Length: 147
Image (cartoon, rainbow, N blue to C red):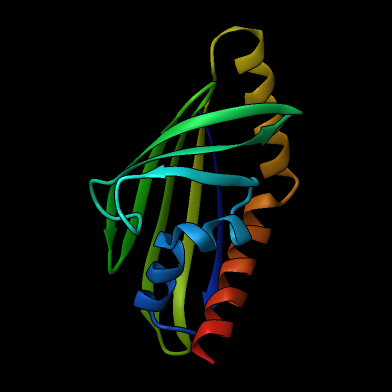
């Protein structure tokens, strides 16, 4: 498994960042990979919730079953199972000028040709800075909402 990380400081409180991370309508605006939340067993992503997300990777329509493991004041963590596996975590920490956000995405290879292709495409997107752009977009979204 390869793991990618990025971090930023957000001009907002950790709870403002968590609200952005757990809002299913906001996720599509900042996520490193374009997707839509199709099925969610509640109004927000919260500890214990499950969702189905669908998007495009490597020119393929792909779906993932998402399990949220933690959605609290200092951490948002989930796994996504589909043609590849993704382990996603956002650590949140209050700092003097807002919140420090450290994001990580672990990419687990899928099986078969399609799974390997999607894993490589995902790694390429993340290596190209997609996660860095995502945490920057999170910061902008939070700053717009809290301004």
